Structure formats: structure tokens, C-alpha cells
Length: 131
Ligand SMILES: C[S@@+](CC[C@H](N)C(=O)[O-])C[C@H]1O[C@@H](n2cnc3c(N)ncnc32)[C@H](O)[C@@H]1O
Image (cartoon, rainbow, N blue to C red; front, top):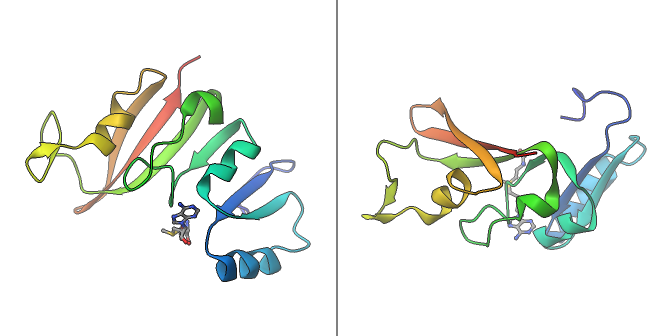
């Protein structure tokens, strides 16, 4: 993402593992407009609103509550939530029960969301904040 960004794009990453956050901060020290915040995912609320937010740790609605798209995204900003198994039915189920993590994103009133299958066993959800 850092290599592909346009000049002037600020990248913020939040990491709760202290050693990992420290190493990442060292790795990107001196790289313009990159900041690594140590702490829980909720620190994303200290920045933003974002044009693109990848919730790859907390805030994805699986083990933690979902991030609030209306707080974290600009209008038409996108949120990416990965590591789902591809959906095969509607409504989506997990263990015979409604898949609340997936539904939270696919049915969020502030988002237009879609699921994209990336591999036989892997899918990601991309939500775009409604204007
Ligand atoms: C799947 S890894 C991210 C990998 C990274 N995006 C990459 O492509 O290399 C998830 C990371 O999120 C961190 N993490 C998990 N839960 C978190 C939380 N609640 N708050 C902040 N970071 C969290 C983990 O420590 C881990 O480093």
C-alpha cells in the first residue's frame, strides 16, 4: 500500500502487539506520511475519516465489534474486511446460525457492500460508504 499510494496519501496503521508495533515503526521511520499507532484498534478513531480502511485485526465484527463506517469513512470511502469463507447461501450462516459478522457489513445501512471471492476458500467484503 505504501509503495502504491499517490504522493500526499497518509497511511496510519494500528497494532496492539507492542513488539510488532515497535518493529513496524522502525521499519517505516523516515518514510513520509506513515504512522504506526500502538494500541487497540479503536485508536483508528483518533484519525480519519479515511478514504480506505482495512480492518484486518480488531473492528471487523468477528471477535470485536464492527468499526462504525459513519465515523471512520469519508463519503464514498471504502472499508475492507477479509478472511471470510465464500458465501454459499442467503442469509449467510455459520455453524447453522446467522453469520452476524458478515451480515453486519453486508446489511449495514450506511454501506453499499459486496463480497468478492479471492480463492476457493477465501472471500473479502468491500463496503463503500453511501454519500
Ligand atoms: C492478520 S494480521 C495483519 C497482517 C497485515 N495486515 C499484513 O498484511 O501483513 C492482524 C494484526 O492485527 C493485530 N490485531 C489483532 N487484534 C487487534 C486489535 N483488537 N487491536 C489492534 N490490533 C489487533 C494483530 O496483532 C496482528 O498483527
